[in-house]
Image (cartoon, rainbow, N blue to C red; front, side, top):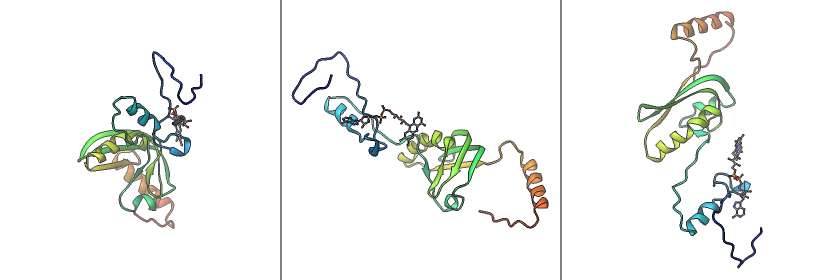
Length: 152
Ligand SMILES: Cc1cc2nc3c(=O)[nH]c(=O)nc-3n(C[C@H](O)[C@H](O)[C@H](O)COP(=O)(O)OP(=O)(O)OC[C@H]3O[C@@H](n4cnc5c(N)ncnc54)[C@H](O)[C@@H]3O)c2cc1C
């Protein structure tokens, strides 16, 4: 039932389905939180989750467009492992994105909000031991001697 201004409706429960505050262009401007507060509810502080991450330095921008599969990421907070994920990711002009970055983003956002140091450690070939990786790189160099190699 649509309520016009000034009407009162009584209900046992109300579902507030106004979305979050992450994408105002879709109509979700955070109104729901304001309405809930006005009605006397406590609203916990909202923060981003399932988001890409902006990284320091220029390594990500130099690798922008590089999309990787079967990558392992460790999320370190103040040098301690706080999370990990395995799967797909990509480098963008501002940082990193993709499913496994989004998965870890909530923990990263919370840690950054608490002014803690956040480091992402990437293993781009988690299925290979360091010796296997060495052998693989040497084989690739031998097979493509004319290719140039630019370390990041
Ligand atoms: C780019 C993008 C990609 C996504 N991809 C996926 C995906 O692949 N898979 C997945 O599961 N989820 C995805 N999501 C998340 C998913 O869209 C949301 O989790 C979901 O839409 C939330 O549903 P909701 O009904 O809570 O809010 P919404 O879908 O945001 O709906 C809230 C509605 O309330 C309306 N509204 C707000 N304030 C008022 C007001 N004061 N008065 C009247 N109406 C109001 C808004 O206009 C809107 O229509 C994606 C989100 C984005 C932004």
